[in-house]
Length: 127
Image 1 (spheres, rainbow, N blue to C red):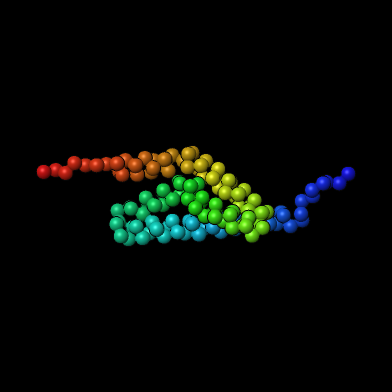
Image 2 (image 1 turned 90 degrees about the horizontal axis):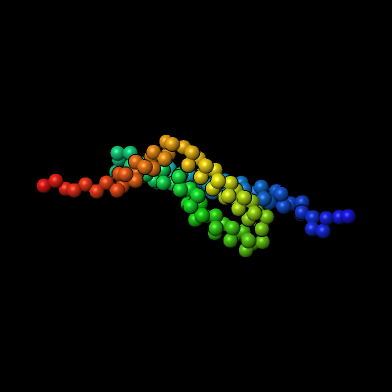
């Protein structure tokens, strides 16, 4: 008995290509986050580069949606559904890894708490 819907021979390589495509997009996003941090540091100083870097890396799950959703839409419109599957698989793996690393790392949690504490620190002006 034969399989009624055999997997096309190129689907595996298309899925791998989609995963590699998203890894490339992640690399570009990391460079952009680092660049924003360096520009912030040059303008404001005093470790201000940590704010965009911490927010960018800890919240990477949400930032990746800015380019993953349009990428999947474009790939599906062009008929590259297997490549879109690879993008979805890598996006889910990235989200899981990011969540695991962010929650389990006390250093990052401390940075987030310090950032929030400093952001909410409204000091009354002294007369």
